[in-house]
Structures are given as structure tokens and as C-alpha cells.
Image (tube, rainbow, N blue to C red; front, side, top):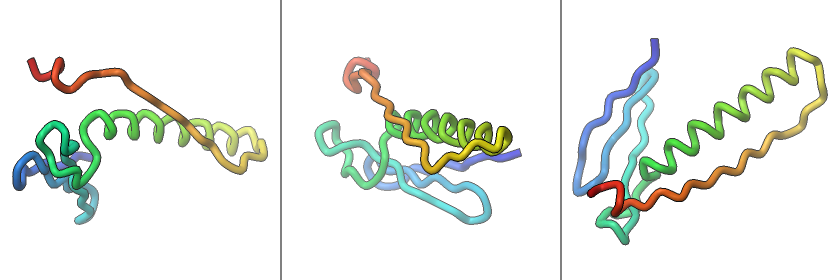
Length: 86
């Protein structure tokens, strides 16, 4: 089973620990009070979804033995931070 541990740091920054000692920092953009030191939660969700799609397409192509050089997934969202925080 995989998991993550999220620990709050300074201001709105968090440290995300996963795997065997790997970490990254999440944050909010400057315009909403963060320091823009890492991806925000919306970016993380889009990255997770895009990664899942890319890996699924890659694995399917491998299984079918189809030639595949690269997968590019572009995702956007229209959530508004201030409205979500109300």
C-alpha cells in the first residue's frame, strides 16, 4: 500500500513525504497568500490525473505492441480558489 505524509511548514507551505524518503513542497500562489514554492492542490490533482492517463495509454500501447514515442496530456480546470474557501 502506498501513502503520503503531509506536514505543514511555514505560511501555506506543506512538505509531502512519500516512498522511501522522497519529498516535495506544496504551496499556494503569491496572489492568494502563499509563496509559490511548489504546486498548489489544483495543480496536484491535474498532475495526478494527467499522469494516470499518460501511464495508462503507454502501458496499453506496450501490451498491444504499438509503437508509441510520447504521450502529452493537457488539462485545465476552472475552479476559483476564493469561492472554494468560502
